[in-house]
Structures are given as C-alpha cells and as structure tokens.
Length: 227
Length: 197
Image (cartoon, rainbow over all chains, first blue to last red):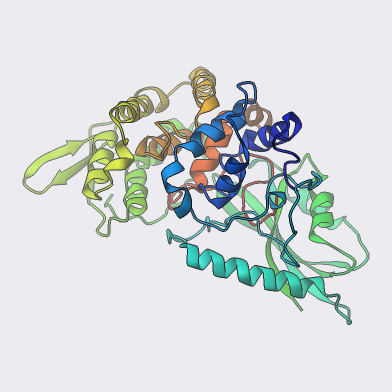
C-alpha cells in the first residue's frame, strides 16, 4: 500500500488516481488519514492532477481543526491503493493490520464515532489481526453469508444463482440461498456456504463470482462465522 | 400522510415520475431530513394542489409551502445554520442549488438528464461539496433529487460522470443522510464499506 514517493511526480500521480473516485483518503469524512498525507505534500499538486488538487484544497480548509479530526495517524504506507509497493521509510507497525475504512454503518443509526471509540476499535482490530495471523492446527471452517448483487431488476436471478453455484472449489460447499429485495424491484441473492479457511479465501470467491460480469454487479460478505 | 416516517417500499413503475407514490417523495424527504437533523418530534405535513406540494402548518404562524422552504425552516429549527452555508457566498450557492433541484431536476425529461449530469460533472471537478468546503442541505436535497436518476444509469454512464459518481457516493455515505433511499452502487464494488481497499 502507500502512494510511493509523494514528493515525486509518480507518487502524486498514484494519489491522483486514488482520489478520482474518493473524497477522502479513508472513509467518507475527513480524518487523520487525510492530515497524514496532506502534511507530506510540500506544495499543492499541479493543476493537471485535478483530483489531487481538489482534495488538497478541500483538506486545506480544515487546517484549523486538523488536530480534532477523527482517527489515528498511521505511517503513510498504510494508506492508498493496494498493490503499490510501500516505499516509505519508518517502522512498520508490528502485526497490526489496518482497517482502511472508518466503517460507517449504512443501515443503522446516526451515532457519531468519537476518537475514543475509534481508538478502541483499532486496538481491538489489531489484536484480532494478530490472532488471525497464527495458523490454526485443526481444519478451521467458516460459514459465510454472501450478498450477490445483480445489475438491475431485469437480471435473471435464477441464472445468476446457477452461475454462483457452478463455482466448485476444494473446501467449498454451497448451502441455502434466498432472494432479498433491496428496493426499486432489485433483488440480491443471499447465499450461504461453508469454506475451509486454508483452502478458500473470500478474495478468491469474490473474484470467481464477479467473473460472471453479465449477471453479477458485485459481491459482498454479509456474514462470516467461524464454526 | 402524516409526518411519521414508516418506510414503504416503492414498486417500480414504468415512469417513476408520474407515479402517485412519487408525490409522497417530498414528504419522505422531509421526514428523512428531520431524522438527519435529529429533530425529535416529526412534524405533521399536508399537501396542496395536484402537484402535492408539501405544506407545514406552523401553529399560529402562516403555513410554509414547498420542499425548499420547509427544508430551510427545519435546518433553522434544528439550530444548524451552517448547513445553509458558512459564508455569504456559500449561502447564495446553497440557495442556487436548492432552486436548481426543484426547478430543473424534479420532473425533468429524459433528454434533460444527460444535460444535468454533464453540467454537474463539470461543476464538481474541483469540488467535494456543492457549496463551499462543507456539507450543506444543498448536498442533501440534490442527493435526494438525483437518486432516481442515478439508479437508472448504466455502469458506463456512471464511469463517464466520474465527479458526479464520486460526489454521490460520498453523500450517500455521509453519516445520517441516507434513510429512505437504498444505497446505489455508483462505483464498482463499493456499495458496502466492509471491504478493504
């Protein structure tokens, strides 16, 4: 992760691409993530990198409040698109896998996250990630509930389900499914499966499911329980 | 229809704009706005005329008529004047977009949609919010108004209007805004935030 060298043109370009469909470095409100990246830039990005410039001018307007923005500053290599080699100098945090998005609960409440709660959450996430990093001795299985979303309400859901069930992998067993309406006549396919953790990862599953581009718009893991 | 916001799923009709259920959209928007503002007691609204313009009867004061008028009143009632703009310029811009919403976006024709999105996309190329650098009620009402248009866009169109898509995704994820509207996958695979990017 990271943007490469933000003091160079190539790093700025990575930043620009990253921000083409985002308003902030992380999540949907300004946070310490934005402050961290902003502070590295010595000058506004050039006018041709218009997404980076837009972001820069916007974050600049928060200069007075920068210390009170939510979140915790992390090393630069923790932000940005996946797949970019982390060229930042500085110690990598031990075992702590970061959670990029300040997850804002779409389906519920308007509760505000205060910095205390976010810190606690990140602490707990770091602990969970450390636990997860240890290999289990027994065959660990998990029960997943996947939401598969079609393009629109005209998509043939029966065919979509057929395609999903046609995915065969060692360690993957499909379970029940049902169609859940999400509004405007569109239904999503909610299908459960049991996977062996070592053999099947949600990334691979996602790749395989979204490969059916004609039917599947996106896939998401709605629930993930260890058995 | 009272001010209590019970969610009624809308059945998709061939032209959403002429469906009677849409005329209640203004009231549902106001109910959602009340929720966003944290107004505890939902107001009781009525409607007027065949366009079903929302009306808010305000005790002894004369009634307030129209989505924008009532929305601005609610913002003041909730003591959130910054949502109307934090400078003279942004206040003017907020009003401009509110007016744009009810005059140009509502009941627009299919041909108009492309023009609206093109103009908006150009406007948003160097902006995060519609007015100034802060979230305002202009963003909320434009989001409500554009939602049915965005829902109907193809993937290619959403990628074509990149700035609109970015802004729309931002507003629909803004804490407390999205109540009566389903989330729209504007950007590939980013409808839910549980994924790591």
